[in-house]
Length: 356
Image (cartoon, rainbow, N blue to C red; front, side):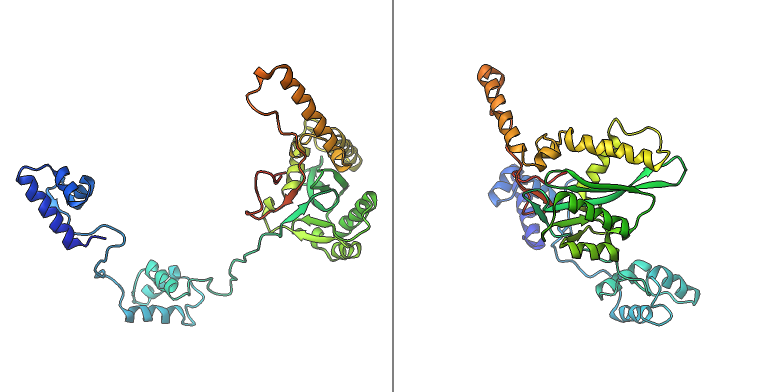
């Protein structure tokens, strides 16, 4: 970095050369600087040389209004005094003014506290908690990782909702279990998990069940059931819906499908009947975009690889018939072999399916 005195010498040499008949650009070139640098070093608008170094890294004089060490110590003593230790500076400074005392502004109080590592929650308020991201889960076949959640279904009574409990396999996207109740309890969730495991023939340890942090998910009855069945629980961070994307995406599909009733459900039986029809359509007819547009049931049964291979053959034949209509390779119909839930950044790449 060129010091300010040396910059003054360079500017003076360029000005002298300019008076002698040289151009400023040539003079700057000879001295190894650009014309823009010279212009920045001089105040061309007023014809006066810039007297201060405006660069952030430049050394500057201490400001005349800087707090003294005695004043900084006084601020710390006041903030740690029993009368003010639970108050923020925005309340301390006016309180001192009422007593006829002014030391510094609120912002100065905050700066001093921050410099001393005391700019924390004052009083009995706890510091904001930091929750670690859930551990990444990988599924390479059905019944390795399940995701479940509860959503509300509107009723004809204002303010009352039915609760839809819904479990899906993230590898195949198949809905493996669901129930509707009028309330949320760990007991309902426990029974649903048992039924889903029985239906899918889960009789060995290793299944991961991911959910959010609701009370039915973390209830004692639910956790005891998971332990008995050998299921490993996984939980989202509080108020972070992105940690449970597959269930959130499924609920959106459910409520935005054209067949979703425009009017609220009038009874529990009506809600159960509609959801039963939706689950049948979703598992057996819906071509899911996240699994190469095969149905969840066929992928769950391992039939998707054969279907995708047949599609590739059809596309290749179409390209052979009309090669002029293809600018490159045919569409990629390879099977998605790995599905991640909450993957780490280094895990994500173009060959891994991440989104729901």
